[in-house]
Length: 55
Image (cartoon, rainbow, N blue to C red; front, side, top):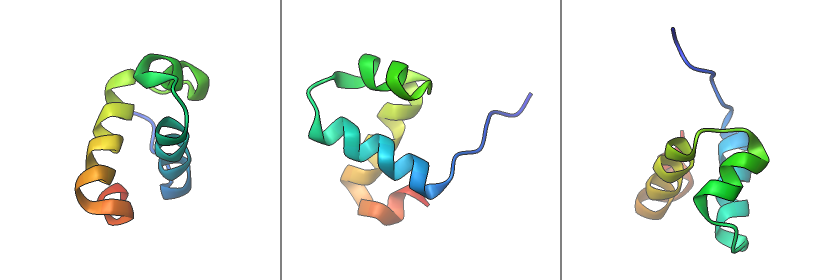
């Protein structure tokens, strides 16, 4: 079963929230109802490639 598709804006919002807060992966994933692993992947991609990494 394929997972939900997230827009670039949604991904960027999650990453920016994670970086601006001290909530960590668990609380950020709960806030946005997104798997914790997905948040980690997006943050790592953003750290490595900037916004282009989230496309």
